[in-house]
Length: 173
Image 1 (cartoon, rainbow, N blue to C red):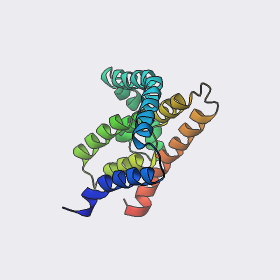
Image 2 (image 1 turned 45 degrees about the vertical axis):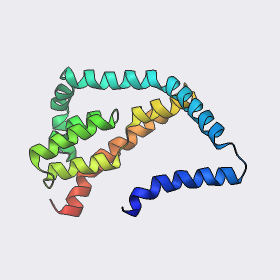
Image 3 (image 1 turned 30 degrees about the vertical axis):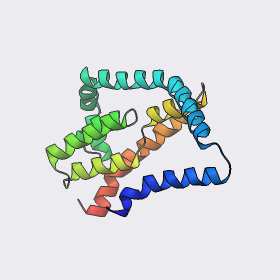
């Protein structure tokens, strides 16, 4: 048995022993935390379901492909491979959908290709903006996000443009 397989059991055991040594009712604390977690889940779940449904509908309707074709000339002018347009559109909304798109790009063009490398940089250096806002703001009960979404989308846009440049600089392609 490797040490890495023991990390979680040891951590849980340590927390239990530490809590007992400090005279904390560990079981009551665990159940109270689980109860609070379920409350957060109930507040966040509707936003999450709506978001994931919208992403699925967006991809299944063909709107992603249509927008990708419309954006292709602009992306080419910015030095971004037009083939990565579906990734650019889906990444701010859903991490799992973005991983699927990235996997498709790497399968089609190869992980060591220019497009595969740009997709990898995009996946690794961007955030699922809408998902994150829905989960964290939903959990905190924030209703007005103010400048969060525009600022995060601007940062994602800068990252998408610079990812192609970064691949060219570091890999010489």
